Length: 200
Image (cartoon, one colour):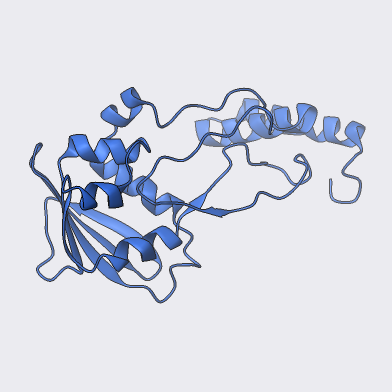
């Protein structure tokens, strides 16, 4: 692969090996990894429409906790080094409350609790948060028009946004099966991840 990335015959042989290993795996995660690698070696990165993760039905079905976990996945820990803050999030319409903490380059959340001395407290209905999750109305705009109430240091949101990246869901499993390296981009952490177009 590394010595001759254009050698399709060698890729096909490796794909045969991965396919057989995959068929013999009891663990579904390992099986899927080997079979996906086999497919990628033979045909390249799968194309077509990527799954739509920011549609209204998906967003409504996603718990707030899951959304906050997703922010943690989108965060580039290298950009978060040295940062530390705590945010309280309260959604009165469904009675939820969360502590969101950035420390040791890791973003975590804890449902059902509030920090005694947070750097920022956000109070907004879950239904309004969904507008931001779908990318229809930025959080800053909701704070500005009073839909969301903020108490504390608003620069925390900008710091959090600076750590967020957009990732390509069509990443290569094996080196050499995709044309060029993916470029990480900054994004508003509370907005939906843009979909990758078929042209890419």
